[in-house]
Amino acid sequence: MQSRLDKSPVATWWWTIDRWFLAAFLSLMGLGIILSFAASPAVAERIGLSSFHFATRQIIFTIPALIVMLAVSFLEARQIRRMSLVMLCIMLVLMVVVLYVGVEVKGARRWVSLAGLSIQPSEFLKPAFVIICAWLFAEHKRQPDIPGNLFAMLLLALVISLLVAQPDLGQTMLVLGTWGVMFFMAGLPWFWIVALGAAGIGGVFAAYTVFPHVAARIDKFLTGEGDTFQVDMGREALINGGWFGVGPGEGTVKRVIPDSHADFVFSVAGEEFGLIMCFFIMSIFAFIVLRGLSIALKEHDDFTRYSVGGLVTIFGLQSAINMCVNLQLMPAKGMTLPFISYGGSSQIAIAISMGMMLALTRRHPEKRKQIGYAFSQRTLPAE
Image 1 (cartoon, rainbow, N blue to C red):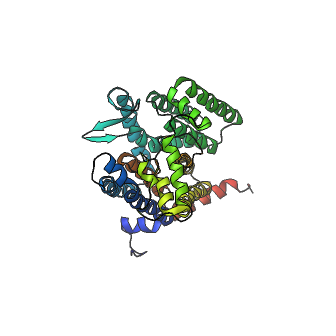
Image 2: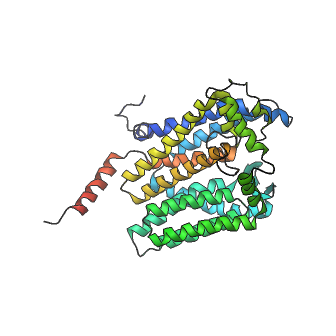
Image 3: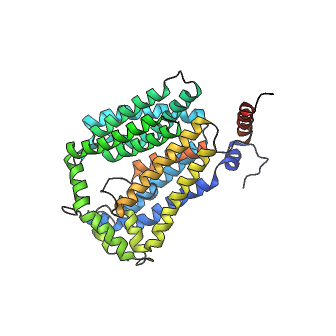
């Protein structure tokens, strides 16, 4: 245990970090490892791999993810902005590269191979996009003559264009929703609220018309016809588990779900550990989102407020989409459950994102006191 008198970087970090956030993230990582042992053996055996191939790799992915999250949490706000700018530029280039040399899976190009590793650039783009947009919104509010909001709109258009080109409409909706929340926090006029809402509705109709696979998924969801095997089995697994589950390793429905270790790990948790476990997982995500929004509302610094609000929104929306798909509350999307679903690229990207949130929510009593004093001085009536 670090002493409060110790002024070393590690001691300072320990006494300023939001330990509730840290505990929640570590809990999700632990659940990811536990559930990988429950969900992945059947998938591994079905494709001719050793039973614990994916579970072992989940542990291997979790270790660097934890290291990255903790390392990023040591950074200051200025370092977070610089890192995000560099990461955004690199990922935008890779998003263009992936359109030409990316690995094609089910008609979409979202992955690129670098040094033998498969990377999904859009996953790493999201946290950098949130931070840079937060900085642009904050700069515009600080100095209205700086066209920060316009630059944020142009950046959004660029990112959305690259995502649609892949195509990856799930990430498109996620980025759009998060950007809209941040723009709302930045005090956008009602005109833009109506315009963005209309654009979103128009975008859904356009996607339904232009992309056959989107139309097929929506039609399957609305009519229940066509190939709905995976989502049907996901729901069946939850029903089979009941309130308390059938027991660790005793699940039967999970054995026939193709992506039980990835997109449908939530259903496996329900089958083997029951709806009680599902509610527990949901409560952790809800706690993170609500605590993040609460901290953002109390924050006086615009950049920090928009950044924390954006990071927690994209984290919460992604988890909500995954769980809603498992519960058949929305059409199937290839969206992972943060820190729990199998995947190296997504694990590291989420770790970077949550490391940023840990860094930005660290307590800086002296700085906050100065900001609060300056704020009170501006609001006091002149004598």
